[in-house]
Every structure is written in C-alpha cells, then in structure tokens.
Image (tube, rainbow, N blue to C red; front, side):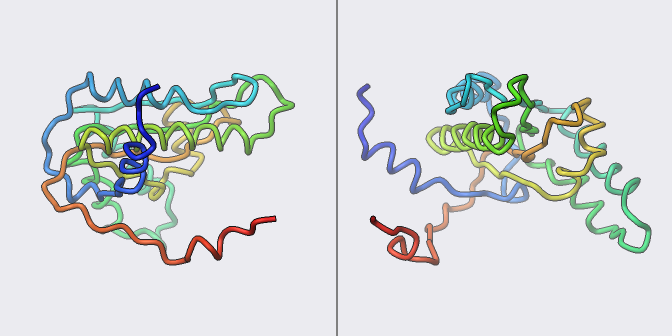
Length: 194
C-alpha cells in the first residue's frame, strides 16, 4: 500500500459537513458516486454480514424523494406540531445537491451478531464514503432529520422491520470556502492510558 499516513490524515482532518443549501447544483458524474459506493463497501464487518445498503437518487428522482420525504412529514405529524417551514425545508433540501443517498442497515441472518455491531459497520461504511467524497472535492452532508428515523420512511423505502435508516446523505459541489475544523474537548480528556 503506498498511501502515506500524512495523506490519509489530511483527508480525515479536512473533511467537513456542507449543508445542502450551500451546494451549487453542479452534477457529480455518476461514475464518481459509484467509486464512493465502492469505498463504502470496504467497511469492517463482523461475520462478513456487510449490512450497509444504499438507495441512490439523482436528477428527477432526487426531487421526487424530497417531495415524498416532505409529504411523509405532513402525513405523519400531529397537526398541532406541524410546521409549514419544516415541510418546505424537507421539500427543497436536495435542490442544490447532485445526489441523495439513503443509507440503511439491513439486518443480517446471523442473530448472534448484535444489532449495535451492524449499525457500527454501516456507520463505518458511511464514513468511508464521506472521506472519499472529501478526497474528490465533493461536499457532503449526513442528515438525520425530518422523517429519517420514522417507521413511515422504512415503509416508503420498502425496508423490513429489523432494518434501520442511518441517515440521508446529500452530495454535491460547493463554492463556499471550507471552514476551519475544531474540537471542543481536548483529546487528553477523552483518552485514559492504562
């Protein structure tokens, strides 16, 4: 392997979240999205269950997904809690994104493997994709709002009861400058050497 620690460190430390509204609408070639999905497929997995699954939307399909997501919110929200601005936000969330990817954990057939490990493996898969996007200069946003975790989303996506949506990923390009990274808790407070 000829990738240096320094190169990997640069990608990890400079990856940033870009909200979809800051994307510019430029289309990512599908081939690059396929490359990101290939990276996602190399996440660690206990028992080789490979629980990560992805539904990819682009073009008109991305617009249709946003409309369906907004309508789920409207249909499944108590009228007293419903906010028209939230509906509009979900409806237009993908307007400037190139691709929208729903990432979910498909529960495998090995019940001895804890669900938490399947969630962790799928999360690693998502992180692989986000790091690959950063290396290619692609902006990304891992969203968990709206109806992402609601049972109605599972139903809309034709998932099984035991499956679990872990987020909605928005990919695109952005003209906005990349902000500086920050950590609010020093590493020394997070690590205890034994």
